[in-house]
Length: 267
Picture 1 (cartoon, rainbow, N blue to C red):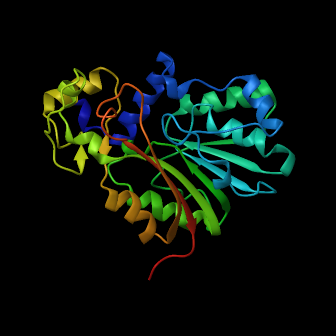
Picture 2 (spheres, rainbow, N blue to C red; picture 1 turned 60 degrees about the horizontal axis):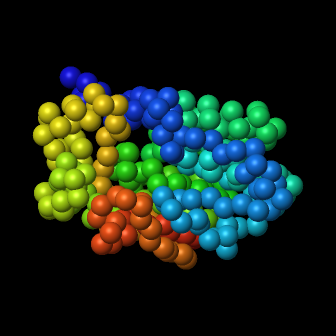
Picture 3 (cartoon, rainbow, N blue to C red; picture 1 turned 180 degrees about the vertical axis):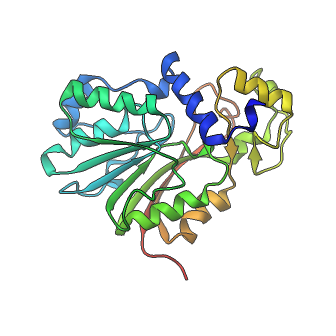
């Protein structure tokens, strides 16, 4: 059965199809946005609506920047344009070849220099220890079954004092029956942590896959926030956000962004 394929492969196919459909998260930034970033007028999002505060970003002078699981021609090209005059170098790492094509499209169109690498966000073995100054990780780790390996790999490849800017889903979003939630009915159905592999029926899971949707996972805050701390980070920034029109957003924010500084691995 299709769902027995590994999650990485299934979700790669789903995001490649999302590019073909023109999903919001796959539409590249315009040349105007790139030009503005070159002038120092820029912002990027880690979560659906709010921009990450500019003070969260370090000095871009000769900075090595990793846009982790952030393909789609959005954050990466803006960072490349913003850091161009300062000698910054940007690498976009993503599981979807079609998403990475969007970054290359912008780079070629607007004469930007950036590197694209295909891979699983849980394994950054292609990169040496302590090689990045900044990691930008937009809301994407809901598409992997376990998140703590991501934080450990981020800590490994970040220089001491480096910054990790991450967006992720508050697991409260996954408490509810999705079908009823789509109709505006909030009915608690699931325990946390949530997994599309185990928390729903086989027929529901197969319907998601037939529709070309990615499999999702609702990680606990112990794994999202505690996992960063356990990997050797200290939190230095935090905000919550919501996606307009998505329930239960009318009652509580369902997205979180954090700024974390890499101090060192805990014993």
